[in-house]
Image (cartoon, rainbow, N blue to C red; front, side):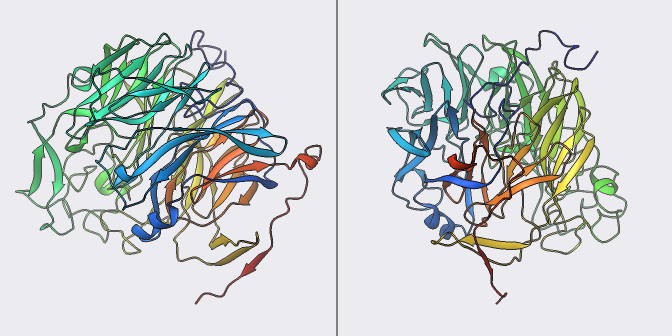
Length: 567
């Protein structure tokens, strides 16, 4: 009997016809029920962030932000829309986050209404946190101030605040996106800037419940306990330093949610979220919570791998390796077994897999900043690992009684001794999309080999020049998979790519601009239109109305391109 069929009651049926939330469904599998349209044309271009040029200027040319997935409900699209004033990266209080409803009318996407939220991001990170709503029933639920949520009518755009905390307290923030279970209950994380955190559930009838993260993770270190911070700046490599080691420890702080996590919800109602110590990203847990918000279990990300010195790092004593005599497998920054780190600069969120297991990606620096992907069973036991997991919510393709996991797989020129070229591994700069089997073993890889940095001109033409980048990253915090198993993902080269279930490129289309960072997800509408983002714009890609009867093998016409000489 096949893997999926052998698991009755797991509840994985067909994906919803629309795209109502992060990952499309409560399990975050990123799978659509429609076949994607060919990437023949940009059907619409909707600017949602008027501050892009200022934001890039403030950060040296990169767009340091995490953006929500476009939500699709039949002919309607719900998308972030920013207003206010930009007064500097990290100064969030002068900007306003709104949701705009757009509706397809013939071949045009036209505005219906705008709802103005009073949400602001928690001021704990330089990267712009994600503002992610969710569709449930006849409403879209939108983050608000003080840890509250607005229930906004899809029809009218009128909103009613739901505040689970009583009096509105501006020191409390919605952290990460909202999720909805199969019955329409809303689940999200909330946090204060001083490190207290809660898991929140809003029932379909509007009643609320909260659970403090210190209760959800009872085995975590106490706030005053000491957690490892790594090596002091006065200790040059090679690492780890010889005994007596000069590792630094500091107070852990209380457990609270990682800032951009969207909780996942299993078909049986179990909620999965992620916790970290407020003052230390090396003390983190995958947390399973029952529907009544009582703790089920928590699994630490410490001591799960042993792939540091002499494993993923060159031999100790050699260039790029750990100090001669270092213990095999340890993290050179701590001298101890590696720990999965929970960064507030990521938007990794849990994924509930078709067999009931749970997937989550963490950060690790020693393996060239690639992080790790961890797979746990439904009781919190470790099943498998893969040595990439940085800032990605993988997508899942169910097929042939089993499933494949689709993830970006960037090989960075970063690490303990590798920064910009020295002591880097030979694969540095290789930028892959990788398909993993249920044991996290690679099935195939697709590499983006583009070396051209391009921008679209006002007349629709594209101007390109050779890039100084060592490979354009897959700058996507979740890809999408259509009904045919085709994966859609955005690259930092400014293009949307379609890669088949065999790992071969099906199609690509250039959007607006090659752009560093700007982590953006992809969604697919019920008609197969692809919703992608680049440079603060929402692009909808597919077949023009007049061409919808043309076979899928039609030639992909692209705007004219002119080449520039490198200066």
